[in-house]
Image 1: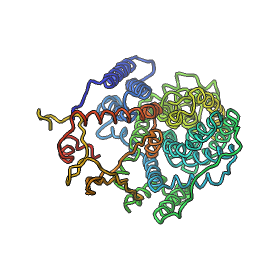
Image 2 (image 1 turned 120 degrees about the vertical axis):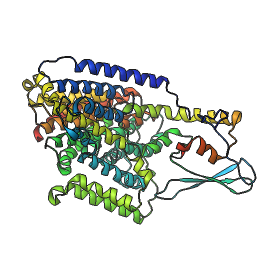
Image 3 (image 1 turned 90 degrees about the vertical axis):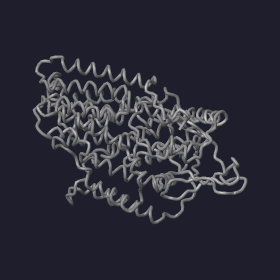
Image 4 (image 1 turned 135 degrees about the horizontal axis):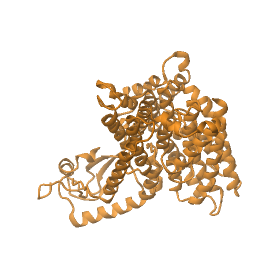
Length: 455
Length: 126
């Protein structure tokens, strides 16, 4: 096979990388007052990571590897500015198999098994069968199903599943029925919101958990759900209400033709059983003492050990996402060790704003960033900074960024679920912007207030 | 290999029945829970087994629905790449289909399928 190196895309990639490196070097030599040599270098790496995660000249996980490479070469090598010795540089590598990464991996395996044996489809049909045929209830049922599934399965996969259910329904609507837009928008929005509910729901949650754990401020699975689920319920209800207001149904019923469900086979029952046991073990880790990340190994051992999943499934797991999470946490290590996090928050007099004001500020910044760049990149860039802000509890800051990063959903590029829904050609971009902006604004207001009173 | 000894960038061929040489085949699609979908090709002329393909993806003439199916195992993090994928998907499939037909009409590869895979495209088997 001939590899064509000088494609337009590769030239663009090279130029973006070159600009990022030049700016990174310039920043690392800027001589900022009060910032150590290691801090300057880390700021340079942070600049490079920001440019590459925003412009995406290559997949996000490549930037993660580049971060580690730069950290070890310029900061962590023996005798480097951090003064590390021997294999101490591995502190930058450890995040790639951090407990949170293993937890996420276990979640991926559960989700893969559920998908492989069609349990996600079955569950969605079981729920939808119970919602009746009144349009607003059908929308509520679809959004609730989507949100529930996206707590355990990736937001993208959940949206794809539910859109496949929704598309034949909305195509059967009368041509100018406004409620079709409510359904098409409700699914991605519910997937974005649902991901907030569990630590494995979406990468920003894992990034927040991982960076907080580095400073012994982590959450258990249950602790996360205790604040995650109420926020999901509130945002979901408001989202449903707004969509019903914006696109009120003219039709009186929506017939859902979901087909008859056959009996569940033994393998499916077994997978569902393992799923249930794992979730119970996750929720009760403070009782039995086994960390959630170790519980996450159970589905790996059981499903692959019993050949219910195979090598293909292993390759299809979301390794790229795990590396993105690892890269963000590795950047967090460098920012902490070099003193950059501390220096950054010293430069802005945030104390004057009060803790709620600071939470609002970071919420707005996260919402603006994640409207244009990936949620994971936003979390990777902001959470290492916010955990150093003395006016805040690290938990409150990290949670606000993780949650708002998931709840900001204005444009098709804001989240993969939005992109999938937009691709259906059933909605205009301005319609997504209108509904998405309202929900994002509510999240930016609501989440900091909620978090302020919880933490 | 091509005549110059370099590996070709792309090629295409029709499936032929090894028994009678016919190029008309029937696709017999096999679904088994927990396994990849497999397509058994039967010669439409003499009924012999021609080949078996194991699917890693499927795209019908309704590309958006096919994309939804593919995305059910995906874990995208970037809205940009998701949007790019969604916008390009249907168009890419149709364009590539036409390109393959052109390739076969103009320069069909005459080598056996195993040879093409072994010599030029071992990565094609995943």
